Length: 239
Image 1: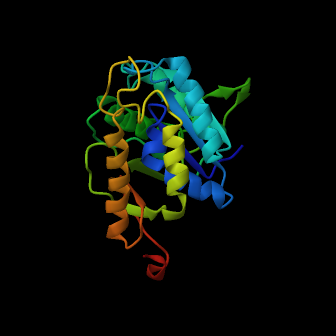
Image 2 (image 1 turned 90 degrees about the horizontal axis):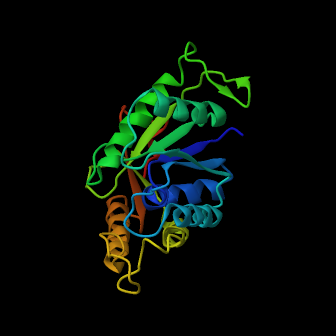
């Protein structure tokens, strides 16, 4: 299956938090959209890897994506080396996405910036024909997406582009809250509380979307950065 948009991020829930709005938007518009999680988030303080996989499946159902996979890299210990790069290259060549969205360039969680660099390097390598990969015994063709964007995550980074997600905020929020072990937990159970389990975290997520939305005169927006200069065919299409 060829994808129009692939969100490839390191932890289950990164995609929903940073790009749940555009995922829902493009699914609604008939685009082929997928999510690939690099790890299971197995080092997370709350829940387990098995629970996170179940929650990721539930979130994917809410968003309506055509594909959700996990590459099972080592949470916290993955490296930007050949083994990890080849896993990503195989996935990129398998789905041939036009646009890839990955983690923030730099962030509070060290996995985010490392994952962003790993995906960036693997996307370039995926286009080199002398790097040979196979899928199900068949040789894969080289492929490189035409655009890569990065999330704006916990650390504020000035976005290069803002996308209106106002009609899709409710779906985004529902997909985030599908991670019941992680969000809006407060003091409802005996597991340790974390930075994201407090209900205040969801309020701040909504406030960020509102802040971005206000910048382009809409209610909610998501922001992304680009490693290259972005261009448009028609300035009248800009908000």
